Length: 315
Image 1 (cartoon, rainbow, N blue to C red):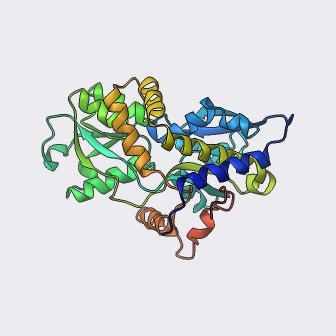
Image 2: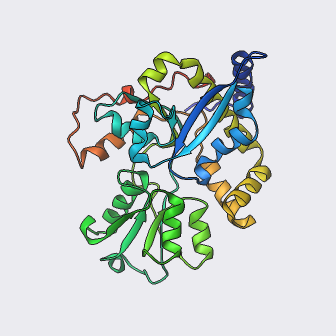
C-alpha cells in the first residue's frame, strides 16, 4: 500500500482546519461517548487538551457509558459519536442506522493477563475472566483466546465490568483469575505481580477505537463530523511527533511509571492507522465473527457499514 509521508498528513490536516474554522464563528457543541479511558483513546485526550477541537470550532464533551447503550444514545441524540467502531457495526447489522466514520488503529493490543498461579490452559477451567462488556472487543478476543488454548467457552466464566480500567481493578483485587487488558493496564498489572498469559490482538479481525455516528448525523451535520475527525487526526499527528509529551500525559493520566508509559506509548503508536480508515477485509472478518453467534444475511454489504469519505483528504 502506498505510504503517505507523515509531514503531508500534518500539512493537509492543518489546511483542513483553516478552511473549516472562520474567525468569530461560535463553537459547535459535540458529545462523544466512550466506554473507559485507556491509552488507545489518547488521541481524544490530546485533541481536547491541546486545543485541536477548539481550533476546529468545536466544544467537545466526553461522556462515559457502556458500549451496550451507546447506539441508542446516538439515535436518541444524547451523544453525537461513540468511540467503539465494533459496537456501531454490531448494531448496524441489526438494523439500526449507524455508520463508522473513523478507525484509529490498524490492529489491536489486547492481552490476557492472569494471576501468577495460572501456568497452563487447564488452570483457567472454572475461573473467571474480566472483560469490559458482552460483544465488546475484549469479549470476542477472550473467546478467540480460549479457542486457541483448546478451551470451550463454557469452561471459563466471563465477568463484565463496564470498562478496561474496571477489569484491571477486578484483577488486582483478586476478584477474577484473569482479565483482557490493553495498555497501560497490562504493563501496570505485570508490575504488580501478574503476568501476560496470552497475546490476543492478532486472533480476530475487529475494528478498534474510532468513531461511529448515525446516518442522520451524516445527512444533517456533515461539516461537524469533518471537523471532529480532523481534530482527532491532528491529535494523532501530534502524538506521533511528540513522544516525550505523550509519555508524560500517559504517566500522569493513568498513574503509571515512566517505563510503563513509554511501553504503552510505543505499543499504541505503532498500531495507529495512517489515515483513519480500515480495509473492507477487517470489516468482513468482523461480520463473520458476528455470524458465529447470530444470523446475519450474506447480503449485508460491509462497505455500507463504514463511510470514510469525511476523513481529511491525504490522497
